Length: 147
Image (cartoon, rainbow, N blue to C red; front, top):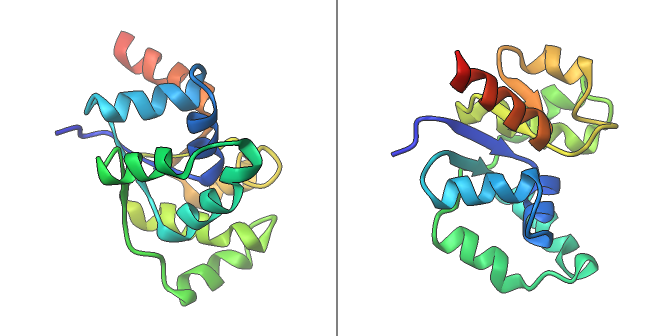
């Protein structure tokens, strides 16, 4: 069982499904190979569902990730916790992502949202959790393996 737990936002799930290469796809593949454990919430999966058609991604691809537990669902954060984060994030609509990540027990939140999530403020709020893009995550993994 993988010990490295990662929390994903919708952008990484969508990117991983839309492309056969790249850091997001590598994250999904690593989870399929049981090298890492991926977590997210039903709220984030709903965001993914809302954008599947725009990216010409089949719903069955997402269903496969979930049914095979490549991505494991945890409970949505409570409204109180989401509200707490909505006062501190650049975009209150992303508060549920930070709330979910903070409750996940994951070592990192992985996102492609440079404007709202991959910011110094969010990194400070979630510390000691890492907040990284897929590319930054793989760079961090390479450094950890070398040490």
